[in-house]
Amino acid sequence: MAKIQVTQVKSGIGRKPNHRQTLRTLGLKRIGDVVVKEDRPEIRGMAESISHLVDVKEVD
Image (cartoon, rainbow, N blue to C red; front, side, top):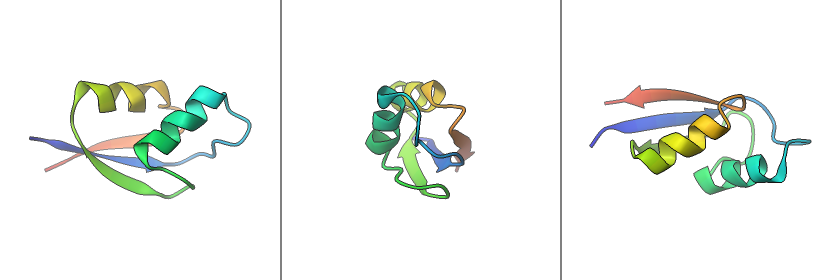
C-alpha cells in the first residue's frame, strides 16, 4: 500500500481545538515533525482538514 509523508509546517498554537487534536492524532508535536502513514481515506481526511498547518507528500 502507498504511504504519505505528513510534515508540520505551522504551529497549532491559537488554532481551533479540533485542529490541535488532529495534529496530535497524526503524531505531530512541533514544527518540522515528520510522520509516514499509510495512504488511507481517514488519514487523507485528517491531513486535508489541517492542510494549512501541514505539507503532504506521497512516498514510495
